[in-house]
Length: 429
Image (cartoon, rainbow, N blue to C red; front, side, top):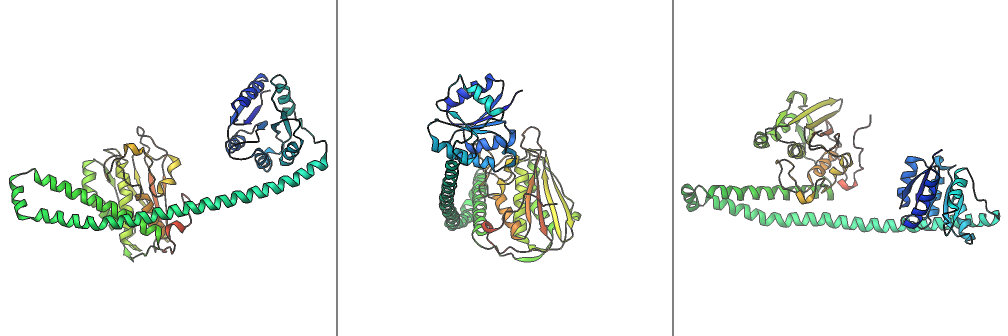
């Protein structure tokens, strides 16, 4: 009968010897080089025998054995390690941790298959001095607790350092955006003065090539202004309370404004939009400017990741005191591993080397702030946002659907975004 054996070891020599012994007996061997990988494999495949080194890179072998023994599914599974016969104290500590036996070191290929059979048939190594093992158990528990405390303190130290770096990043974004805004305002002003300068206007009448140059300059300035505004918005969301400017708003009217903003891009890309204003509520209490910004970003996302000739569909349903609407595209879709991550700041799911800057061209890029801004705005209103997609495929085009659930009367959050409790990816039924 073929059995399953799991080896957790980073030694190529040990792996080769045990592989030969296991396969000689007609069994299957799975190998992991790290303790955490070994835990994942063990939980998924339920091996009949686990062989684990003590000196693993991410967790000591004894801690691994204790972790396995804490789970009901591994109570009866033999777990063995590799130790010289004369290391009595180490063996006692291993038994205290949950090991049931040992392979003698150095490994002997000629007897190893018999040892594998012994453990697979339920064999165990019994300690010859129970009092000594009990003392080892006490020592092991004390050492385990000391090690646990040390790890917790190290994690706290690293977490503090990460928080400091994160705060520095937020401060850098905020200061950079403000520093760029001032000179860009001057550039914008000078650009308009140049456009209105009489000698230049006369020159433009005689040279048709000048107008496109000025238009290119104006478009680039507008793009820079948009990027800076995104940076300032995400900074405001992340670093302090969002003060909602509450008023009576029409969700349908906001969406019409968004569609008007992208009318030219939709026409150039031959994208169809399906939108029934009658489905959307006319009376909500919310921040109209922020809702416009949120839907603008979602629409930009749909346009960017839908090939020419595709379609974008708005759907809406009012549920008691809430409204749920979605924007569905026929685009390239989103890999499930990114369904949560895309709402984090500066998350880029595509190859950065292929990055292009655009809000409307197919697969155009950006700073990775749009969806983070959307989440911040939605959660500031007391709602939630999530995405559903069958996956990423540029040929099948499975599409994506972004859902937004909002209260009809906003319940403003009083916390900065980085303190808001992370909501589940979709409402719980």
